[in-house]
Length: 271
Image 1 (cartoon, rainbow, N blue to C red):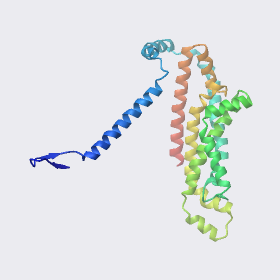
Image 2: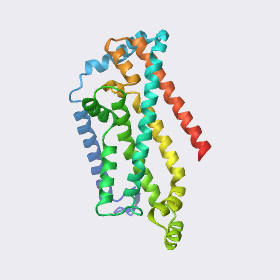
Image 3: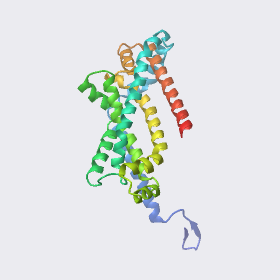
Image 4: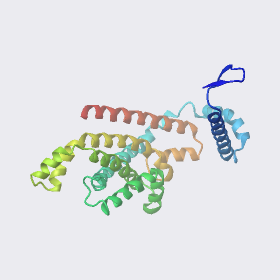
């Protein structure tokens, strides 16, 4: 804006005086809030460990390399268990998520007052709890082993798949649905012939994406006793066998890259 002084000299200001003050208070609030958060985060921090962290990290890397390659055959069976946990858990999750998605979608639910809220509650409950926490609870109930890991992955997958799928159902073109309804088709026939063909590409993409995520999540479930390669990682960490630890980390890294590439390739081929 232009401001005129008593000598009628033109002075350019970026903002009006009131606006400038408002911006000043906004910046003051943001900086104060940041400082408050920083103090809360670092309240219990022991800075002596932070200063020493580069030395400790260098020492740890020295102990990790070279990896103990002779340990690799021992890891193949746990790695296979991990892939089974991810794959079977994903399949169970998809099977359970499919009807839940139809019950949650506004366009296909039998009741928006009673059935839909229950379906949405299942979805939210599944998505709210991490796979590791599901595994922790299931190991306490079922005991350690692959079964706890498979069910944990399945429980976590239900919410993810069902949420994305019911949103896809609500966005389908209603023209085929109305045409079939006009012919007197039943609800199952409408779902089978008008809705499923439209959501099938999304369903395949969502399922493959979830399987890809589950490969990553199943690698750490062994830390709480749910089987797989995470169990070997926990055992190696507990005895400070760092060359074994780095070998397991590299194997997990390679598995995740392979699963992502495979998932992307299948999606390209199918969709």
